[in-house]
Structures are given as structure tokens and as C-alpha cells.
Amino acid sequence: MLAHRPPSNLENAMKSLVVMLPLLASAFLSASAPGAASAAANPEGFTGVFGGGPLYIVSKGAPANITELQNSGFTEVIVWSVEVKTNGDLNLNGEFPLTSNGAYVGGQTYPDFASDMARLKQGKVRRVTFSIGSSNFGDWQNVAALVRSQGTGPDSILYKTFAALKAAIPAIDAIDFDDENSFDLPTTVKFGVMLGKLGYHVMPDPYFNAAYWTQVVSQINAKRPGTVDGVHLQTYAGGSGNSPCHGWDFGSVPVFPYVWDRDKTPKQTYQQMDAWHTECGIVGGGLWLYDDFVGTGEAAQYAKAVNRGVK
Image (cartoon, rainbow, N blue to C red; front, side, top):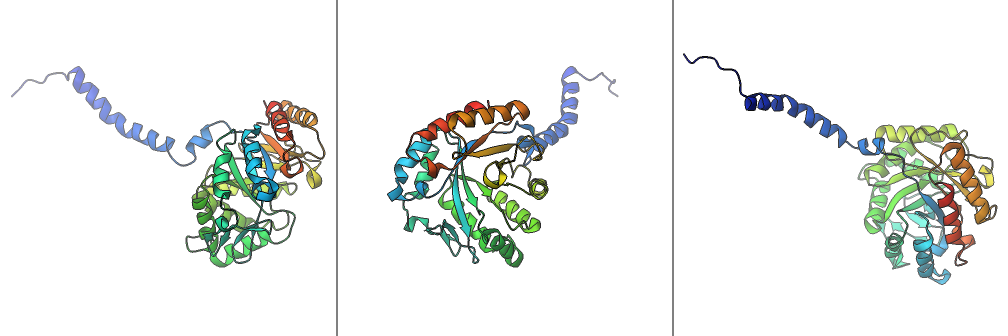
């Protein structure tokens, strides 16, 4: 019989490695799970501006306007306003059909629209967002009805429509939820989760009903972590009394307050953003509405005001 000998240093090291491998694998899988990176990272701030017809109507100078916004200093451009029809078709402001029967048709009206959205990102813009809804009645009621009748699976018209939109315009990063009169929680959450699965982020756009929007954010992110990664808070018109520092707490999801150029000059915008940043540390904000000052040079002034104010 061979005499027992103590294990060598190499053998001890191999045994330790065998014990550690499962633990290392588990740690790797946890770190790479969906939402893990976003949960650990600091909130990302965006300084944005809403824009309507000037972003796509050639007669309103769309090519030059895209160039202006691209170089303005804003890091997010929000294309407003996408209408959702009863059959699931999308249209911009009742004048620009985007989809029909689950297929993208925007190129038939404005052939350069998709490439213009991509061109925005050749400058400072890091996020292109499409905004659904407004104060008009109908868009979110139609979303709710379609979710109830068809669900949000691959065979539903909403899934096909937003998949087609993403495929045609991959530059779109997020969908802004400007629901001002429907507030149907179950269908809105299902719709938001569907968008997350299609590769979109979701950004609520409230001016009142904070309790409702808190549930929207928490429930979407509970089902698909990281889908909602920012809130566009209206602090103008009906939301003129709002402050990102009071009454709008979404936990780790940052709030980006938006002001109206008709209420505030670039200097006043800087002062307001700086005050909010000092009070509660906002990391983003923005302007409503580019259509008011298109081509005047004020886009760069407002972008600079917001960027300085939130730093």
C-alpha cells in the first residue's frame, strides 16, 4: 500500500477553484441579468425639447431644423404628437401617417424622416423619443381598448405596429406617455412592458395624478426592470405649480422637469433649473416647445441654459 502523502499546493489550489466556480458563475449571471446594470448605475440625465411639424414637414424647414437640433446641445428630442387610431394605426398630428395595418408607411409621405431621426444622433442628441397623446381625448382610450381586445402579444396590432416602427426607425429609443384623460392602469402597464420587450424605454409625461403615475412606473419596472428610466414632468400650463422636488417621487427613476419658452427666457430657464438642481439634485430637464423658436438660434440658448442648470 502506498503511504498517504499531504496534498500539494497545486492540488489545494485546484480544489479551491472547483469550490469557487459555481459561486463565480452565479455572481456573473446575477450581474448580467436584465435590469441589473441599470439598477446599479447612476440615473442618466437628459436635456430635451419637444417638437412637432418642424421635425418632418419640409415646407417648415425640416432638414435645416434637424441640423439645428443636432448641434443645439439638447441630448433628447421628443417628437410630438403620435396619435393612436382605433385600429392601431399611428399618425403624427393628423397630417403624417406613420403606420398602416402594422406596417411602416411614413416613407410614402416624408422619405427622409427615418434618416433624419438617425441624423439627429450625429450631434449631441443621445435619445430620440416619440410622444403618444396630448390633451386630446382618444389616443390612450384606443390603446386601452386594443390591449383589452387583442392583448400585447406578437399577433396583436399594437405589437406589430410598434415593432414595425422600431424596425423602420431604429433611432427611436423611447416612447413618451402623455396620457391626460384615460388613466387605465392595467392596460397602460401591459403596453409599457410590451414596448420594453421591443427595445423601447418608457418615459411618463404627467402634469397631475401623481399617485397614478407612481403606480405606472413601479408596476412596469417590476415586470421589466429598467424599462421606465425617466419622467418628463410638465411644470407649465396645467402643471405650472409642479416641482420635481415635491410630490413626484419615483424612487430611483429620475424626474426631468420641463418648462415653456413662453413663460421663461433662457436666463430664467437656467435660474429655475439651477434652483431645482440645488434643492433636489435634478440631472435633466427640458423645453416645450421647439415650434415656438425654430430657426431663431434660441434652441442653442435654451439647451445651454438647461445643461448649465442641472450640473
